Length: 195
Image 1 (cartoon, one colour):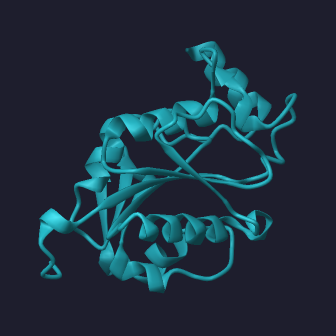
Image 2: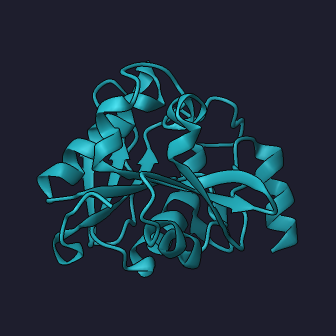
């Protein structure tokens, strides 16, 4: 523990939604593709809001996301094409403006991460906590503010680089659900047929 009063700690959920989705060959942007009639990004952001761990920040790139809940704070990453870590930094800056002492980061193309997973990861007091599904690490990931300066400035990996370099800071959190990505039209069709 770092001596802070837990009453003053603020956690902000960050949903990264700035990627180009270039592997998706369906019509339109992949985050607008639907499962059970709901766009992927809306499913993920609704889940983050329902988790009720704190304010929800959505980082977007050059694609607008219609239908997001009014509770979401949408911020634009002008450098979205320079890699995922730039969106992480934009999200953290927005979270800092909201008084955050920790962030829990998820990806907009992972619609099967549950609200319970967001809450379980947020409840950790480790500097870094990562959701684990059947022993396999996924999202969301919690980053205490003490880790923010340790994040790389460039690249397309988000917090994974930091977790590899500083495994001593990481606590895996067993979660139910799935951190499967919807990256391709085939991924979407497979999950649409299973739902």
